[in-house]
Image (tube, rainbow, N blue to C red):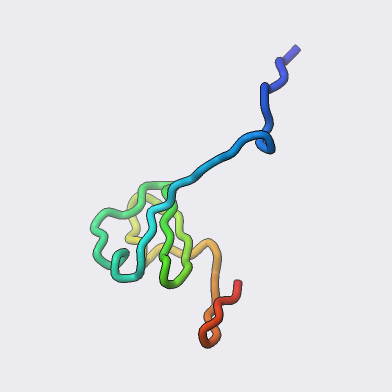
Length: 74
């Protein structure tokens, strides 16, 4: 019989670190995000996941956000 896991996700605290910066920061980054590596634009609120090849600016956002005036809408 398979052994039960000692804990479940609800019992654990997970901390993820994201590369983050504003638009100017991402425009100057020569290294693309690694495959699966998250990056966050603090100015546009875009979250993107690297593919190991594509520059941050050319990656699609995984959470489209629309700006109407000074308000961001998801």
